Amino acid sequence: MEPTDGGTFEQAIAALTVDTNGVRGNEPGFDKGSIATYGLGLENSGEAFGQTQWSFFTQSTGWSPIDEAWGTDFHYDDPRFQESIAWWTGLVDKGYMPPLSYTQGGSLDQQLQAGRYALITNGSWNIANYSKLDGVDLAVAKTPVGPEGRRTMTNSLGDSISTTSQNKGAAWKWVRYLASTDCQDVVARGGIVFPAIASTTPAAVETLSATGLDVTAFTDPIDDGETFPYPEILQASEVQSIMGTAMDQVVGGDADASSLTAVNERVNAVFD
Image (cartoon, rainbow, N blue to C red; front, side, top):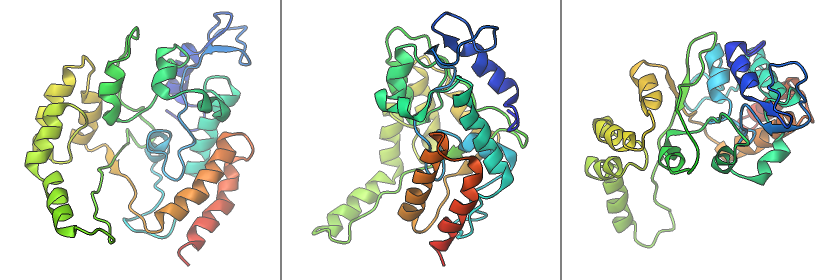
C-alpha cells in the first residue's frame, strides 16, 4: 500500500468493486455513481486514532499521532498522515468505498452479508460474530504492507472502579479477578475475544480457529513485532471530540486533509 496511489492494495479494491451493470472498478465503462458492491467497506471516520478504519494505513508510513505514551504534542499536521488520509478518503470519490452518509444504513457485518461490501477492516474481537454470518464465504487477511512495513494496532480494555461506588471492596475483588489468569483462561476457552494475558493466547487460538477463520492474521503480527499500541493520552474525550468532528468533515468531503493542520493546533491547545 502506497499513500500516493494505494499500490496493489487499491488495485485489489478496484477489482472487488462492482457497479450495478456488473462492471468492475478496474474495467472500462465502470460507473462510480451506481455501485452494487463496494470494494472496501466503511465503518465511520475513525475519530482521533482510526483503530479499525485507517491506523494501519497511516502508521505504515512511519507516522504516529504522538511520540510517547501520555504525550501532549500531536502530529495530525504531518504530511505523511494527511497524504494517507487523502488517499483513503479518495476511494470514496473513485466509487471504491461508500460515502460517509452510507454508513448510517447498516453495520459492517450486515453490509458484508448483504453483498454490499467485498472487503472490510475490523478487529479480532468480532471473529466469532463474522463466523456466524450465513451465506457468506469469508477469509481473513493481514493488514496491507506500507512504506515502513505492516503495522497493526493492539489494545486491551482497562477495568476501573467508580469513585462514587458504595462497595469499593467488592468492586476491587471483581476487577482483580478480571485481570487474573483464571479469568482470562475462561475468556480464552469461550472463544469470545483474545485475552489480555499472553499465556492464555494458545487456548484462544484453538477455540477461535474452530470458527473456520484463520486467526493467524491477528496473531502473526504480534509474533513478528508488527504491532503498535492504542495511544495513551490524557484529555482523551476532548481530543476524540475535536478529531471526530474534523475527520467526519474530511471523510464526508466537506474539508480537505490539509485542514487537519489547523485542527492539530486545536488538539495541542487542549494541553496548553
